[in-house]
Length: 224
Image (cartoon, rainbow, N blue to C red; front, side):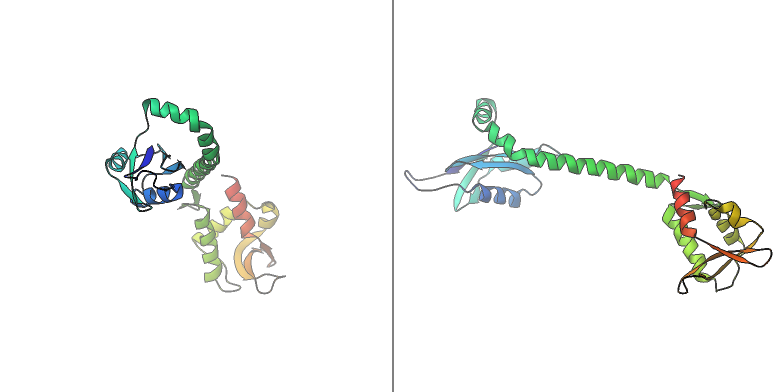
């Protein structure tokens, strides 16, 4: 787009501040995305992103004047010979000014695509454990924490909690050794870290062996 100052007196000293032009256009038309601005003393050019551009706003901008720097500024769409002249005179400057914006836009677009794919992946990753569906891995973690917090030290798991933990421990790297001579699951204080509570496998001979539910859940997540 082209803009120019209206009503200047002959020999009147005036210089367009392109930053003020850009600021005013953004204030009056916030939904139009400016990607380029330049100015001569009494005129200049703007470029708008054509991504989701609202043509009715462009029409509105060209239909009226904006008061900028105390003067009336008129805007018009650059086309035909005027557009060819712009590219001949300002094409290099335009490419120089927008190349960083283009890089940033491409980077942002790529990040959005990655995030979208990850969101879809997360949405598709649900888990069925002991006949119960968990929408994501965080729900599985919450379930294990709930069991740990609700049980007292030395209290054994029962009902569905036993089935839940049996499936989880099947993902442990030492599952065979952990579950050998299995009798029950129990909650208690960690044998090394006194302020930490954890799960234990209770053996038939009464001995107990702790195991990391976190490792089990990590292996579960990695298997999906």
